[in-house]
Image: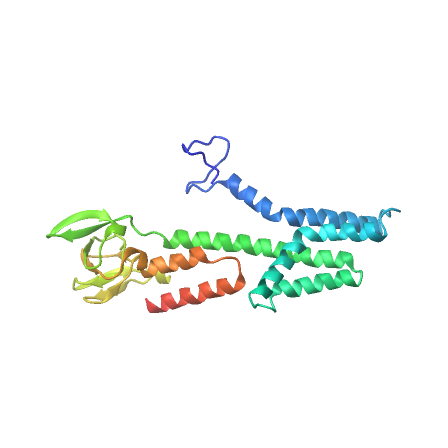
Length: 267
């Protein structure tokens, strides 16, 4: 984000994980821009109505001014309401907000109509920012799978890319190493740190034949795990996919939360 192809950028400061602060600020400003425009026009109109009366600020001129103030924050919501109706979602928050604010215009309460939609738009922007940060934080915490794993081939330990490991291959996991794929423990016993998946700090001891999942960290002896799931089909990959595909829509966030809870209960 914001970096040139050769990786050199002296005009913008980037943090250690490669995220560009300047680009992030520009994105936030772009998200708030409609609300800023609407707020400025609304404040000017309120000033003309109550503190600095203008002879020309009456009739259609006044109405058009408030409509223009409403447009940046209101029209996207009205558009969403229409699209929701087209999808069969009639009683959406978008429709309710549209009815409330257009109704305010219909009875001549123009400042109130603009203000209500403005506050709603600002709330949506803050929610979107919060969701993006939460998704980024969750993905950072979870997506810690090793790029390479050690497998046993003809009793020889070789290092291969995790995505190239086949079902049935045997992974050799040393103490402190993180498992890259789901599988079954074929060693007698092993203890794993499952905090990245379940949030539990207490070690989880597995017996021979029990399932172990990508993201778990081996804590004691060298262990062997027979791969049972492809790299892209592991439970950790599914969690990451849910996080990646989730958006700022409330019903999708609920869907994400429910599925994350299901995955956690299965561990």
